[in-house]
Image (cartoon, rainbow, N blue to C red):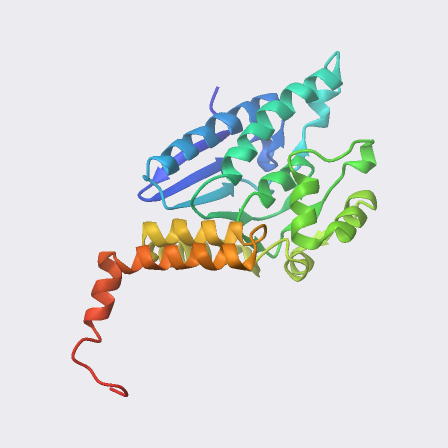
Length: 259
């Protein structure tokens, strides 16, 4: 059977591609097993220094509608099935979150349930105007999984996260940007062009600076200012010794102030 989550490599870019059933990418056991495997492949490539950016994209009309309730309705023990599935899904999501390189998500259509966890694992989320988010958990008597409670709390604050989850509120693309769930919104037809341009600009920065900058930004939420200043000093000194910065300096050599 063809994988419903696949790892692809396009030059220095790793791509995690969702291609589940009917263009909706429901998360059944096969899907989350594939997610776990594909995330491991992406993580290995990142650790080996073969990729500098990762893009998560979904084929079809929707990003992911979350757990496949129609599939769960036919299993003998839904609780045991969910326990198995969260094991695979959570390992894959954790691997993506821990990547040393930036993760960009291309978001079109619906993101619901565990699909929101895949959305929020990204550092940068580019939403199409068709994008929408609906938790869905409370409506069927479930609590969140896939890192949804963690990701929403950090992006929009605990109070808003609790309200969104328990009231099962729907966010459209504009509201998602306003709250900080997404980085920006563009027309769906422009999603690929916007992401390709962003990826090119990031790659132009250089592998070392990409990784250092992601680490600094990620650590800033838990570091003291003194710790962060020390890390920044170490990082910029290391970058200053690389060929890219020396080449940039050569453009200024021999010039004078105001030239």
